[in-house]
Structures are given as C-alpha cells and as structure tokens.
Image 1: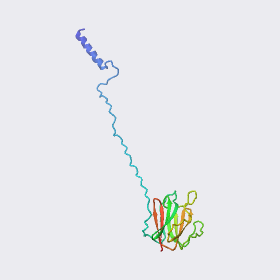
Image 2: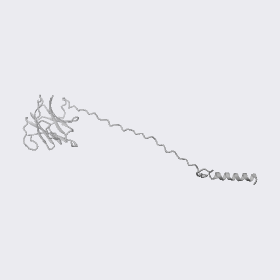
Image 3: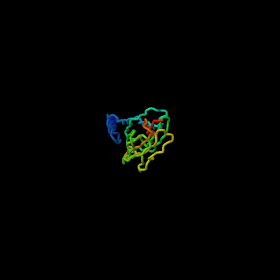
Image 4: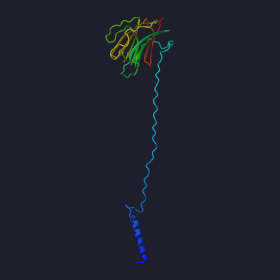
Amino acid sequence: MSRTGTAGIAAFAAVALIACGGGKSGSVILGAAPTTSAPPPSFAPTTTVPSPAASAQPTTTVPEPPADDLSGFQTDPFRKEHVLAVPPVPVVVAIRTAHHPGFDRVVFDLQGQLPGAESVRYVDRVIADGSGDPVPVAGRAFLLVRFEEAQAHTDAGAPTIARRPVLAGGLTTIREIALAGDYEGYVTVAIGVSDKAAFRVIELNNPARVVVDVRSLT
C-alpha cells in the first residue's frame, strides 16, 4: 500500500474514534443544547413587625363631689340600673358619714363594680327584707337605699358592714343608719332623718362608691 493510502486510512480511523467518545466513559449527544441549572428564586427577607404593646390605662381615683356643689337635690324616688356581669358580686364594705355646709353625706364603699341597680326613696316605715319585721330607726322620715345584685357579706357569710354604723359628729339632718336587709342579692339600708329633706345620689368609680347627700334643714 502506498504512503498516501495509509495516511487516508489513519485519518478515517481518528474521525471514527472521536465520534465514539474517544475511549472515554459516557456518551455525548451531539447537537443538544447544554443543560444549565437555574439558581433558586430569591425571596425578600421576612421582617416581623412587633405589634405595639397595649398601653396600660392609669388608674385614677375619682374624688367625691365638692362640698360647695348644691345642685341635683330632689325628693322624688331615684333609681338607676347598670349592665352587670357577675360573678363577682359587688360587696358593700363600708358606710361613711360626714357633714358639709348645706348637707349631710353618706358614702357606700363597694368592693368591685357598682351594683346592678340602686334606688333611693322615702318610705313610711322600715321593714326588714325576708322576715318582714319592722326595723326601728331614729328620725321622723326614712330614706330607703337599696342595692340590687349586691351583698354585704363575704362568700363565707361574715358581715362586711355593721348593722348600725357609727355616725360622724356634726351631722345636722341624719339621725341614724340601719341595715334592713342583706338577702338574696339585695342590700337595703335605712337612713333616718329629722324630717323629710331633699337628697341626691352620685355614683363614683375607682373605687366604686355610691354617695347619698341629704340637705340640711337648719
């Protein structure tokens, strides 16, 4: 064979070897587009915005009405109701008295919220709740104060107010205060006065109080 024929056979063999992978393992697909792995999508960083803390409401003690305010007195029956969620039931824990120029003041201190209702009216005589027995009270006229959905005792049954609270000195119209009932969610208190006088009722919160002022007759 001539040198030219030998060179042609060698060139053909080299082309065939390349087409078959050149002796390396694996196969190559001719004409296929290269496969490129796309990077994972990027996400914006998540930022947690803390919710603003609820601002605590300051507890402010509401003062009793000024002593020089003489408005709102009446002799007609008074009644006021409230939407009340119980338990706990409001508890009458104290009865306080004081004289101010122009009127005597009775303050009913309550533990918890104001009662479901309070009423104040004049009655001819004082009757004990439950038994119906008469309750003697000093005075010529009688204001009956009644709290509904309230109690004057602890859950263990111990009384939280005296049956006849001690009066402050210097009162001009109020003669005596007597507990007339603490029965089935009703608390009834009688205020004996020297004669029928105009009164007013004031509600206060923080802490809960009901104020009954009775005009002076002298």
